[in-house]
Length: 303
Image (cartoon, rainbow, N blue to C red):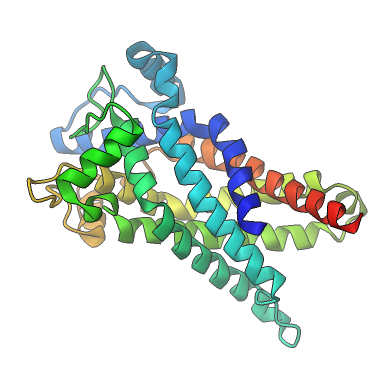
């Protein structure tokens, strides 16, 4: 049930946060184009201008580009991630009664392990989601665009061109992204929740506790995950040769090095603001629904 609750809670959240994911992806990829050609004008500068650009070029539907793939990605990723972490927590693996000081490290470890497992399952959906979100009818937001007509067509096109390897393009970067993000999110959420339960007002409300804890978790997740997120997006969306080999970045380390040389540290935080606006409410909604579903399940079993 833990895995089902994780996936269901994520599906409830992704519809509301997908527009911000589109803006984040466009800003990250436009940063790559600007660094290449030293462009002065930006179509996706800031939340307001990015939103106007998407509406002007792609209409309201543009804000939900790649939604089916995003739902599949979030369901597969969070069902495994939250389910794995909750299972470890139920088995007592995130706590050490004899050495309480190790508890934060155990939370980080199992959060990272859950991220590794979820990255493996969800990587193909992330590849498709990113390539669909990058395509625009107007301003050229990326150095390369993959013109797929739909989610399932995208899966077919990628498989025919590059095989299974194409569906797992950027897998090491995706693993780094989710290991770092999951370790930060799950450990800070768990620790913050335990801290707040000391106070009566939080003991009386599962939703209030989850909202407060997930707000803190969302901030730390965004700050720590952003560099890996930028790298994953760019590797995933790069042009490929006839044999399916990436033409811009050979691996995750090459991508990190090229971003740093051309854009500096700032390049690793392109699209950070829409990312935080996406991650924070998504974390709040996802983890709040997760806690709510678990609470309802426990009440039902007690009856």
